[in-house]
Every structure is written in structure tokens, then in C-alpha cells.
Length: 187
Image 1 (cartoon, helix red, strand yellow):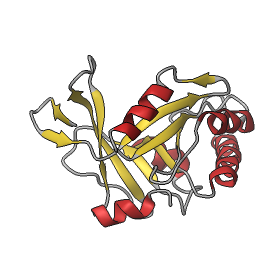
Image 2 (image 1 turned 120 degrees about the vertical axis):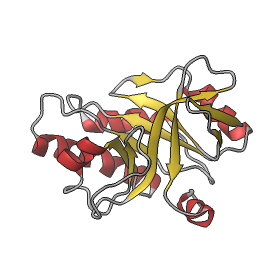
Image 3 (image 1 turned 90 degrees about the vertical axis):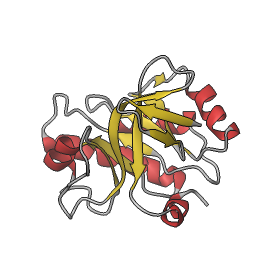
């Protein structure tokens, strides 16, 4: 599978992240099809949950866990957190730690935390040392972040086009070698 960005670059797909769940009840209606299609295409796949801070963290974790069965060769689970809702920073962090704890207990590994660079720096970096981040920061030549922020993936564009898709998709790169990438896959 190959895709083109708006500036004409051609990219090969080496992995795919697929939205699985959001909040306490929503499972993306295309998740099962997208999940199986990635497997059939032999593309390493990862599932993510869109975290809503105003909803119960344990119920959100249960929503993800009941929807996503990870297998050998899959990427670690991801929690996408982009909003603080009606919470203070300390409340957001506490709630997110509850969600992450349940995910770690179920899958036996730390999830990757996804957000934009500003949100990570303002709300997450200090309280999630030891976690790897997937950072959204568009239209830059390179990703520049504080050295304390350990990132695995950089979402550098939201305007890539894939044959068969009517809308632009996000484009991401992995921070490391192919050997490094294989090490993060579920054993």
C-alpha cells in the first residue's frame, strides 16, 4: 500500500493505528473491518481509545478491553487524550492513570500516549515519565521536543491520500530503525 501527501511525496505504509473506542460506550463502527483488513494486508496494527476526561476511567478502559483483542505482532495499545474537559490538571492525570493502570493489567504492557505537542508539554509530560508518546505536530520539517519527552511516533501530516479513501488520512513516522520497530511489537 502506498499513499501520497499533498506535496506529492509517496509513502509506503509500514503500520496502521486504528480507532477502536471512545468514552464509555462507543466502538468505532469500522473498527472490526479496519482491524481485520490491516491483518490481512500484513500491516502491523495498533488500536487506540479516545479518552474523554469527564467520563469514568474504569468504564472507558473496560470499553477498550472488551473491544480490542491484541495478538502477536500488534502494536501496543494507545490512549488518545486531547482535552481536559471540566477537570483540573491533577484530576485529568489521576483519571488517566486509572485508565492506563487497567490497560496495563489487561495487556501486560504500557500503552502509548497520543496527543498534540502542546497538550503533552502542558498536561502530560511531567506526570507520565517512563511512557512513550505518539505526538501530533503537523507541517514541520522535524519534530523538536523537550529531551524528557520520549516519543515513538510522530504524526506529521493530516493530509495524506490513500487509494480508495475519499478523505485525507494522517501520516506518521516511527522514531527508530526497523529493528527498533520490531522490538515494540507484541511478542
